[in-house]
Image (cartoon, rainbow, N blue to C red; front, side, top):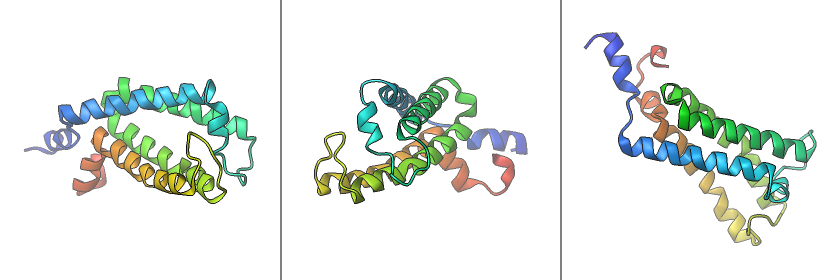
Length: 150
């Protein structure tokens, strides 16, 4: 197998991964729209107090980012590996908001107990894995032997 064919085969995804990538994309678009509309106050509760920007601006910007990333997951399949990495990085970047909600005991999204807020913390790593796996980025990352695969 020549190098070009090898590089192409590394980023292939199964139909199962494609379905989950599309589901994640739709989920992100839906969440992003909610950031800008009906759940704006709920999302505002997750902005940590130490963020040096206006909380509402952070909610709007993160909503726009979610819509953009979600649409990219759905429509830009040729760039899915890079988009998967970007989505995973986004999920890591917003994780401090979940930690802040737990530490500061902020009720939002029905998370009105310490136990519920604590359990929520375990879902963020699953979202990171979902983004990496469904986009094929996990496969590329785990099997790459050189930086040429990305």
